[in-house]
Image (tube, rainbow, N blue to C red; front, side, top):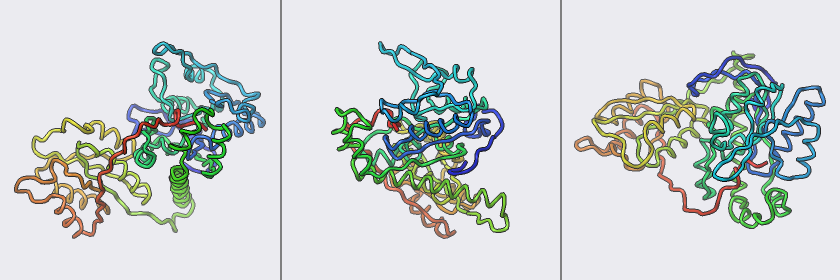
Length: 397
């Protein structure tokens, strides 16, 4: 994928294993923002009008201008695919008509709000990003929008920072399939001014938004996350360019990250933290679950199947090892797979202390350190209680 690369076309069809999907046929462009109101939909429509002026067949599969006059004006002249109306719990709601988009087969489809959760019964998929993959697989280019808090590996960090749950999430690997990611940036001060003028939310919601999600410190942090993500992807694009055109001067990272997981509460947070460490160090991530004796998953916390699915969404490799000595298993795996960094939780997992087995965490730190393997000891963090609702879909542009 690329943050600034030229348009290209991949080939292949998606299979049932999303972690190993081949490249979709259509060209995939994402407008990324730090928060609602930065202008993602406006930028998407501006690009659509430029392409339309050049003779490209562009349609609006689903575009939500939210009553903003300048954004609505950019819809002029664009063909709009009629939305599907669905009755849900006594309310009539509108969703994108995926089948209609596929039948129309335009060159380019505009699909706003990549992280959106579809109304049950509105189509074959629960999430809009799954609809987008179907459109790309049909050979149709897609231009879409998303905010940084919806990225699966960052959602927990945003929840901790903002005290607001992030319910709609997009797997990291979906964004990394994009051919182009363009950051639509806006300063926190400008966003708060737009909010005060009623240009983002209705005036009745402004006061709550400014004291919750749209606090200045929160917007600064979200902007940093977005800038860092795009910078990382741009660096990856440079490495790919060097691989193709200047292999003699290619700098290859050798970082390999391993995270040890159990089914105890908080392990999903640990896993996402490890994914961020791997991403920022340009390293690969291996997830290791050690099965000790007949110890089963606890009543609370994530099931192993859920953690395995999360690892796939984060682009990590999953490994299960049967061993009554977790320290030995973890250090052996690290040595055999040339792991350079181990991420491990400081919470007292079920097998950290086994009778006659010694302090497992201390052994891992000591034995791995003896082989030159760095250890990241991650503290358990709890999301502070908050009744503040997340901004509507939190994908508004």
